Image 1 (cartoon, rainbow, N blue to C red):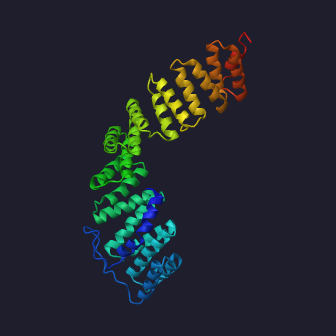
Image 2 (tube, one colour):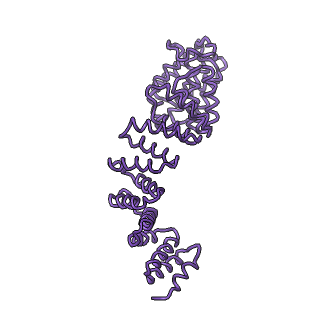
Image 3 (cartoon, rainbow, N blue to C red):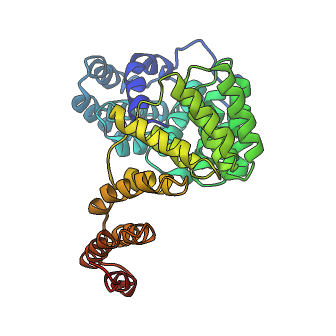
Length: 377
């Protein structure tokens, strides 16, 4: 769940939430609910305060509205509906003010008072599960959704996905996958976030084949969607299908969609996982550096040095090592440079690199000292 997006949506739906919480609503949102709906009516004594609370709500006066709601909740003369409705409105006001813990508390009260009609009662329960999930209260969210689904008999995708998400966050991946899939199958236009969640659940539960099939299907339907293509890359990598991952990344590269530092790193790292593709890795690194997309840091230059070395391009490898070594956190890269220079019979340069290695610190200083002790200037 993306908190900012969820919060914006909930703010946008505020007036709709008010309508759905009213007992006068004619639409039945939960026709299969097992709960016996109470005769939800406001008491005559509390009606003026309820009206005042709603005036504050309409005017976006959260502090004043919550104060009246708290009075109603504490009023012993108020009935179950008065209490529950006030708690539900207070929850909306609290959430609108970014006070999610208070909103959760009010929603729990609204449910406990058991005075709302089914639309309001289960609307409060559904919102509670979402907020619990948002606040990382995954076990509580799952418990709330289990009760919600059990009592409402709902199979709506937007309800199922909350349960699937909670199971996923609890690392119960095998249980999460079928619930998330049910939500996706039941939705005419499933959100991309749901599809990503299902792929992740498959991957985490060891069902890499299912994850790959789904990623391939989504990617084929969205050939120009970089996110969908990168999701496919991720599933291929998880399945150690490096050739296929590189193929997808190369298509993105050809289309000019490798426009972030991490994109180039992913491609050259993938090539380095495939025997005999070191030259391709070097080409990718050089392209990324020349375009200014790939940052010229230690990792990039080290990968370039290794790519050149293992593709028998020793002199370019030495040049890359010389760029990587000063940026390294220790002297190990200088020591590797010294070894390569030694192999090329460039003894004076090898000795100087070995000295730099000792100065920056290495695990085996004796190796560097042996190079320094070599005959020759």
